[in-house]
Length: 440
Image 1 (cartoon, helix red, strand yellow):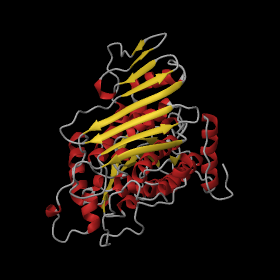
Image 2 (cartoon, rainbow, N blue to C red; image 1 turned 120 degrees about the vertical axis):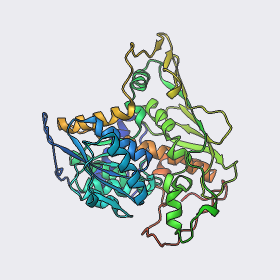
Image 3 (cartoon, rainbow, N blue to C red; image 1 turned 90 degrees about the vertical axis):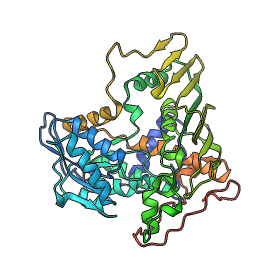
Image 4 (cartoon, one colour; image 1 turned 60 degrees about the horizontal axis):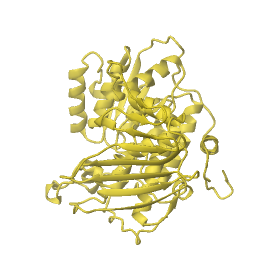
């Protein structure tokens, strides 16, 4: 890593990757501090949970967390919108009447709700707001010494990723748990498959082909549905998926799971460069996100990763991956079936009649178990890097240019507005046009 020009250079092997990741954090992080609450093996103290972001995914994460440990309680919740918080609270109280202890004084709303949850005396925070806010929320949680579950992706632009890498290193120094919402990494069938691939069951990886073809996640409503007096920020937050500063675009917010499969198969060594196509075929009612991408990633060893994504109605859906190595191939079938390998020794995943634990539950089980052991998990580097691989592909599609890992990591483009306020003027940035949109 060269720090002479404040740029970060490319790691080309797994060893270099891990070394570079450590140096990034060391260069950026503040001196190590102790966690506000550390745990030794056999600990049985009550763990207080705070939820930041009370939409569907946040409510689901809270439910997973409340089932993960016998002695946890939800004591604080925060969201920008009061109705969303109230809806989430009612659902959680119904499902977990003895573990939800969120009194009125600990129901926080507004743009500063995240900080109020963090400052409320909780031990673990669940970060589930729109991704554009995650670097700020993660930094605040780590600074306060909280253990963290952080949904994917962790940022929508490169400055956000650099902030996250700083927070990740500081979390390690403070011995804080940081579990990433890349849920497939906690799925038993996928762990069985990818561990074999990484160990060479299909030889050296040569080609990864993954798809994320689905319908629109959160369709944009027409402007006529905007209520009188609703500010630009409020309108965009209500429809956050359709604005790239909040979601990162469909490649980064949803298809990022397929991106993470690719990263896993490639031993979490970042790609050298990416070239991509993408655009909007179905007219948008508003917002500025694409509805399809096709990204081609090149690795230092000559391997290639191909990723196609689409969010359009009345089209074929598919979320799978095929992996080709020098000795065979593997198939990742996601929700569509059990993975398998065809090579010198064939392998088919078998749960031996025992249904694997739900991956969303498993990631929280392991989070809380690591806290109890005093051996906190930290998924932060791969969370940041898989997110950046998706951002890198979006940059390539938006600009029509070849984007290297180094360029992506050091990009100066800031999608997230500065000094966000409810009444700010926040015009929608025009949709990117390949060949005209410039890389910065």
